Image (cartoon, rainbow, N blue to C red; front, side):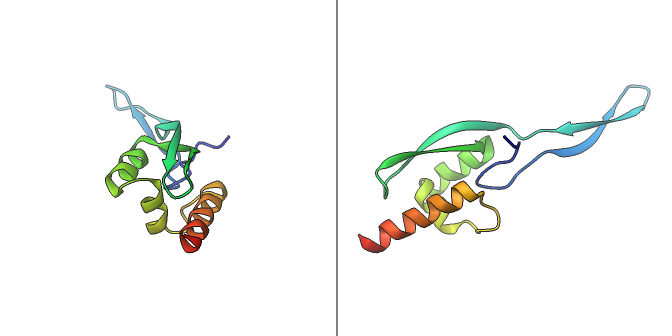
Length: 95
């Protein structure tokens, strides 16, 4: 399982630990990923994703997973999220 947000594409970054003596050693900054089930109003069922805490706040701010995916760029989404986006678009088109 990769350490990458399925909605925003946010992944690990690299930097330095800097000691009091100004010694620098490499380190990784990992994204704060959580396994969540978000309720899709269009599909009428929960959707399981592994997303960052900041992405979860953005989903709430935009009014749910359906609205978030409608605005999201396909390049940022994981294959799983892209599949869900197409399911939602198909369900909205038939409704």
